[in-house]
Image (tube, rainbow, N blue to C red; front, side):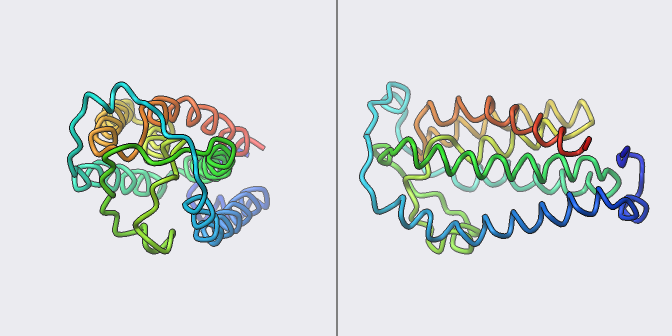
Length: 206
């Protein structure tokens, strides 16, 4: 099905599109409902404290406002582009589902303690999904970095892609400055996102 050139009204007429959209929304809702108990468990266990050379060189500062000034406008741009691009919607939706599921798996498989001198992110939405804004062990890999890079991969406009990719690099640096992630968490995120983007595109083409 080539839904990219179809409006939402006409794309909805395709059963395959409806299934992918509805099933994706249901799965994402189930993931959202599982976040509070999942991170409550993760936060309560002990993990490995890494000696991160890069973090040792960076004094910790609260740069939460700058992090979300990058993340939220880019996310809003993606939603805006989805208005006329149903392929983009399905690709990101399923790419993000894979991102969430794999990230939860890697967090379980790689237990880490919070980096030294961590400063909590002031995220207005964390209390909604996590039940608290004091989650410090959701580490490998960086969800903020992976999400923003996935946004850049999904966008069609070359200029917008470059801007978002540059924003991803700045975002990753800011996360390290705030000491909310290890360097490996940030560096690994784009590689995972690239895989999830390809998986999302496969779902779109089915």
